[in-house]
Amino acid sequence: MSTSDRIEEIYEQVKARNAGEPEFHQAAAEVFESLHVVLERHPGYFESGLIERLCEPERQIIFRVPWIDDQGNVHVNRGFRVQYNSVLGPYKGGLRFHPSVNLGIVKFLGFEQIFKNALTGLPIGGGKGGSDFDPKGRSEQEIMRFCQSFMTELHRHIGEYTDVPAGDIGVGGREIGYLFGQYKRLTNSYESGVLTGKGLTWGGSQVRKEATGYGAAYFVNEMAKTAGTSLEGRTAVVSGSGNVAIYAIEKIHQLGGTAIACSDSSGYIVDRKGLDVALLKEIKEVRRGRISEYVDERGDAEFFPGGNIWNVPCDVALPCATQNELDEDSAKTLVNNGVKIVAEGANMPTTPGGISVFRDAGVAFAPGKAANAGGVATSALEMQQNASRDSWHFDYTDERLAGIMADIHGRCVETAAEYGKPGDYIHGANIAGFVKVADAMFALGVI
Ligand code: NDP
Image 1 (cartoon, rainbow, N blue to C red):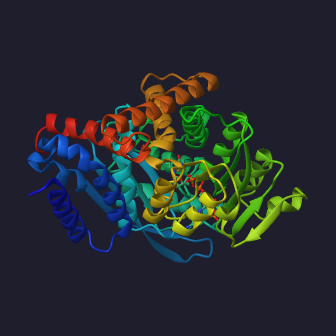
Image 2: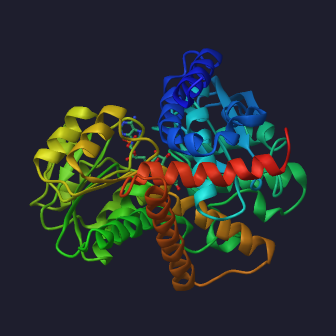
């Protein structure tokens, strides 16, 4: 059987075993596409059911999360933790609280996380979790009660050497605080290393909050340098206005670029003078408000309710909101408007059709598992600081992050070239991540 046929056969098995999980199929298909060239060259990776084992999570936990709202009504949500692969270290990956969360989404995120974490070069395995709980409009007390109920079950499955969750959509410093508080209470131990993204006075790391966005901007800077240019004077459009988006915008500005547009699920804003990051933080982090409030305070800015942010012409596009937010038509619009670099701050925000458009147009395109790896990398630095009971300064940690992003970029470029796909960051990231995990899986035997 040819390599292509063997890969196709495994992919069909994956789809059949995981029916009704389109995001997971999409994430697997993207990695499988890159594996053709590796498996042609090293067919040994087919042995011992390695690819089949890689696609099957080591453990999937689904649990009930009951909680009581401010009016005394009982709600029941569903909690998930998919512990995907731990050959390189404890499972590591965020928790997402969003009504769209289901097992297939958590599996796609966990699968991506395996390769991303391998790419960082740090000792962390891959996992992901979350709940279909919708934090929007919930009071502080409701959020706390939900987090406590969620952790009441999750605590049995996590630990410093087992599984170390962090934040993702809907889970930031506030939620990590309530989760950590409940873990501490249930276990009667101050196990700092069990969660990352903690507050700075109780075991957190400098730069963790900023890390995913900063890291994506550092990655874009490396891409620009490789293309013989820089971010100086370039315009950027960043979707979302959450944790990743805000700090990507901040670092783009520090690196000489100008971010002119961002969004939330209600629409997007354009501020041609450059987005005011302090105002964005005030609206989103302090007030927990909507992006439309921005134009109330910046007279020249415009709000486009429900519009498509990718209609805004730019040199650099950074999708930083959610999966499949940038489709084929949006990609065509960006290309026609002259986009040069696209880097995924979110996980799998570009559809397969969108990726093809960018590839065909020769746009430099960085997949999330490379461009947004700065968050998990800094989480691993937080674990390192917790283990040594140390805390590093901001500038030092930021330098470490910049160095890690440059290393990941270099690894993608070198691997893509080595496998005959020069300049293709998707193949570079997938292959480099795969080879590292696959070699460790062989070394550890059939487990
Ligand atoms: P946040 O919850 O802080 O922000 C998410 C942003 O995206 C908000 O502006 C939100 O708008 C918007 N958004 C979310 N879902 C949708 C949707 N279905 N349609 C339109 N807009 C949406 O999350 P993060 O910034 O932490 O995460 C953003 C992305 O980055 C995710 O893909 C996540 O997996 C990825 N990521 C995050 C990391 C981290 O360290 N936080 C690490 C690596 C990747 P609204 O508020 O209106 O819903």
